[in-house]
Image (cartoon, rainbow, N blue to C red; front, side, top):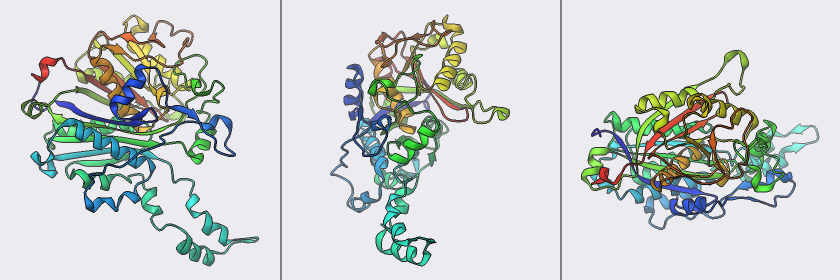
Length: 433
């Protein structure tokens, strides 16, 4: 391996399955799901099903200068921070060994907990009259009745400054706010900063929450939420009975280092970022529809960058949103890549375990993939029975399978044909000796 190859030495994960990578993996192995039904008054029955985190406690050893700032974090920013905290702790890295300017930070977010503007309700109620809005009264009521920090809580990059200050990551950085692929993009940017010798360590963090009412109604209007006729078991990627996904919330993080220094400090290497690739399959004349093979090109580019063919993969973790069009496009992508199934590589979908976590799913699924490959298994696809006609030769299973190699690929895509692929190799013990 090259001195500047990028390795993963720490991981952090907080999802509806539980807190920490170990708990999440144990529950995946037990075929459990974190999706459950709530009891929100007035919400349609299918929207009651969500992947919700019931408890998240900030660590007691926060720097005193930051304890007063916690109140400004929005719901899922807390999840992102806790995942990053676990990843840094898990790495065993002493941060004082690297200058703050050589610590890179790339965050992918998708928090929609404040888009309903319910915090403005008291002021708007005071200002509404029969004939319209009294703007003078609105201004006055907003000052008196609205939390002045709503703006901070509404920022899509809400976590960035807090996390940067917590660990003094002051090197290359950015904050991405988009749909699922931005989690994969944060991994790419973090890895690139190390490969190009602009940083010695990097954090790639994803966090998101899609479970409050306004996002639920918006997702439903797009026709991509499941009707949940089979309860939590309705989220069934690649199954011919699929009818959409169930949203969730969570945070995930990877701690990355350059290979050479990691080996010299005796770090336990969990995986190597072999390659990343992004591509947009958008077809202008067709608008924002799902392309025929949404992730095919990004997978090809990632494998080319990794210097390996698809037959070298132990498995592929698909995006697996459970929508009719999206999954069909992914199936077509896998069929093209795997020569109609003649290249026997298992495909799995992980989102039914947690709900769709947006940007956090990209990174969280890489973490679960590392655990799977290290134990020589392919995770099962919950609730899967039979796939679409014409794709029966693809290897998708509701049961765990044996993994043939330590290399896997994690794939993500978003609305408009944007796709991201990450190739990870789980090394043999000889790499850490």
